[in-house]
Length: 88
Image 1 (cartoon, rainbow, N blue to C red):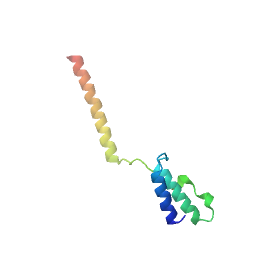
Image 2: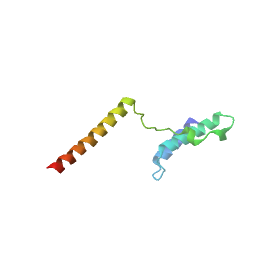
Image 3: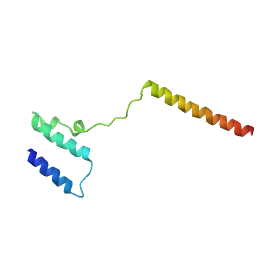
Image 4: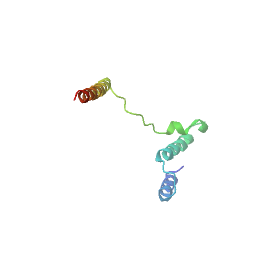
């Protein structure tokens, strides 16, 4: 695909009102097609390999321990409120 064709498709897809609007799949498909032009066996290029991956941020041990302390603090605080209500 030439750069002119790419621009034409880009403009066309911007004008199309009923287009499927998952741009990550659109760009993954474009990358898949471009990669297929550069390899000997184009059937080996999979769409899943071209998709962007969004992974959740991994928490550090200090963040995990702070979250646990906060949770147990709220839990113990709620238990104290229940005890005070039962006494009063």
